[in-house]
Length: 551
Image (cartoon, rainbow, N blue to C red; front, side, top):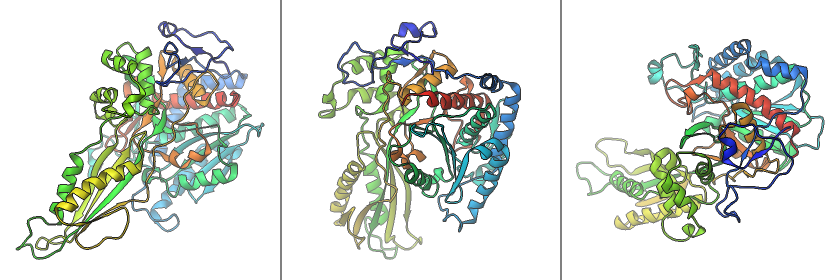
């Protein structure tokens, strides 16, 4: 593996390929770095595999050919045509017939990637979880783990006619493959298998083991898919047994006049709080001044009227992105740079976080990378128009900021609910006890999740982040900057935390004409084939670079 570290922006400004050297220094983006002259966002130069053969070189050229392009279109299109929808109310595998479609998808993969299925060991975990293992020649090396999910978000029947092309047509218009799952995330799943299929065809024999783990219920939090797969891997390999994990996630964006690849190295936490308001019923012709729905509505107004403020914890990856912007992006705002340079740990103990507040002005997409979000998503109450509601239920979704805990959310909502309970002489049962008449009861749902451990982003020591960065810049050139990213949503990786601290949520495909996430979860989801081909090439490089890495 050939790599080096670029420490100066002057080296980036010519698009120069850096010379290779062995002398490395340890750098990490952090506002508490001991030397203010030390760069907080050093960029890794392009990293190419050093092991070359005629077959591997031919494979690299084939992946750039029109023949492979057309093959890849057909593979992705056919995958999209299999409607592997997962629904919130899915029953257990083997009991709910809606899972049967995943047999069709598995059969399609087996027919489409014969070398993968004849070379790698395939385990089926909880029936539909697909686990592929490619043993390396050196068992002392921790394997690389690549992930994707087979399932897709359902397409509501009422929206089908709004699609430019039918949602499960896999229609190819010469540039994009259209359909549900085309960009979330059958593209990544197919790209991984395409990369491995071609590596096998080129007689590549890994030293480091490779594991592919494909869940089937990520869109409903992964309890039957990823949870079982992760447990299976943990039981077989043990804690901290994986070198690095790459799953779906953030991609590449133009920010502050520069192009940034933003692999997700963290995720926000998650908690749903259920609020139950119990008040006496009766005939609606003689209502009280405030019935259960009215009291619930007042509490909702109070919750929405007290949002969380933006706050950047030192561990928040967005802080790392801003350091990269300040060092490398020509249009990074002067005010942000000044606040960033003047930032100290005191912001955590007192007052407002001025840097976070200023950064949040960029819009909600940025604001909620550093803010606990609050969304009242479900309300149920009343059963008849002439009967007062006796039980009103509200569900409030929170995505918990890095540096906060789900317990912080519980404390805040308890304080707000206590105000309403006191006003209307109701008993407050806050996260303990049972519902009772004339009460407000708060409970957390079972899918509570703390913010993810943040992946190390040091460069200079051959870390997995360095390998990922170097691979990205090898594919796209050194005008592509790599910076830490963070996800506002959650991925299947939440089940894999015990396996490694090096977890990346990253969609490596990039097409400047399709910046963003390809309309995932909505009408007209589509995937640029140019970006898809880049994804295949990226995984092919990454697998080989990881194979040679000294980790």
